[in-house]
Image 1 (spheres, rainbow over the protein chains, first blue to last red):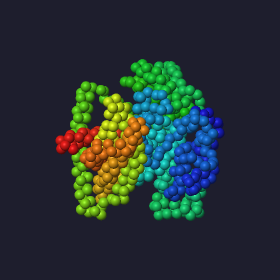
Image 2: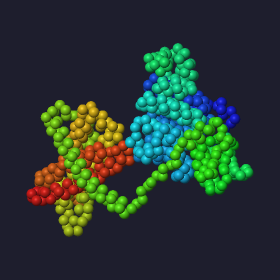
Image 3: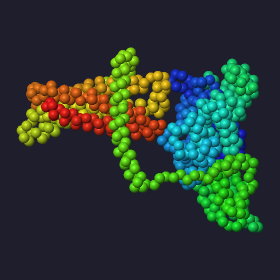
Image 4: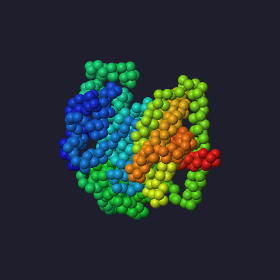
Length: 260
Length: 377
């Protein structure tokens, strides 16, 4: 693991500068800048199709960018060599929108997969840690031997989160973690993310559409529009903003219902 | 962040203190596990134990669990182990792991004689199930076909044409190429061996009968089973995995009528066409080799061919094609709809589709051979 400088606390954990992503002739991200601070939960919102998932996938390296630079944990991902990249990848966890669990492995094997690859520890410890992770995400130990096709939507999200957390990462990306969950389940999930952030000192990058999540779980909110960050700040800043989309988003019927 | 983790033993009066220092995180998990296993040997000593964690620089789930594991194994009878010096940052993490109950041991069933016998029994019973499934699908397809005959408007022409393009038109180049080469090889081998008896010309008889009756249709059917049967299974299987077939059903559509019937029909129409093209390509290839390698010029080849074969040979071959197509299609669709939720299951059923498809094609060919021999064709 890279030695960190004393001022690491101030240095952003993700530093995105001027990135541009293009699919054919459509420019999805256009010179976007974004900082994510250590230990915060950043809620990332924007209209459907604005490129929220694209940005997430660009940061984790699944979508090629045309221009710009991305630094995660102070490592420039373009300039890094393989071992540096693996080190970074080992320190982040990703929760995909559909869970992306390996369908031919059981829940236990899914959660143990990263451990098996990266750590040389005994099967006993892996089993115990798996149980701890399952308990952390609020699942019963019996779930461990089930296959992903035998789980409900909410359970898939929880297992996917457990897998994302399996190596105790410093940073997790959550792509719409509460979509498709019932309001109680979604509320629990927000609470869970909060608790994990407190207990494990996580930094969370959360793409979401869920106003409740923004109010209860997020420390800071960034808004994507026209391929750029149009606003970033606390929920109060968002409500005070005069941007038309933001006004609609945070003062619409649903937002008022959440706030009251 | 600071250095490697350590666990030091310090005696304090009648109590023992275990001082944990350094980084207790996942990256050091193997070292940590060994140290903790070492310290666990202290269990049974009469002293009380304190696990002092005040000097731990960094803690995560792995470290917290190992400390908790140590605490649990050192707590025996009247002896109690306690965690001391826990900083506020990490107390919630340790509380979290404390709630974890001891892991239920995962049982992997050992290989036993009875277990193996049971598996053999299940496999044999599965054969019966396979036939039942095929007959079930045949019935469902016929019923859907009857429904379409009565209500022609429910017939999916676009879909059928699309599948015709996929399984027939796009298969032409590869089918023609391979049957052409097989025709060449048969002719070459025939000439090479018949020449010893001065019977070069009989290669034409052999080629004509073999290609038209057997090789043409059999080879094409096997290739179609590998090419289109597998595609059908994979398509239907992934639709099944993503609940698309359930969605169709809830909208009031019969998946057999919407998905299976057009595919079956396309295959039943395509295979005779492909078998015909294949047979022609094989005869052409054989004729070419007979001319260039065997010195049988094209005119003599055609004259001999006309004498050697009759329309019966052609009919025997081509009649088999739609039946084989139906068998391939039914096997592929049954396997596709049997796919369960996992990617592994999709792979298994696609393999089974091709293997069973080819097996049934060859069995059918044998049945046809007996039948035609009996009726003297």
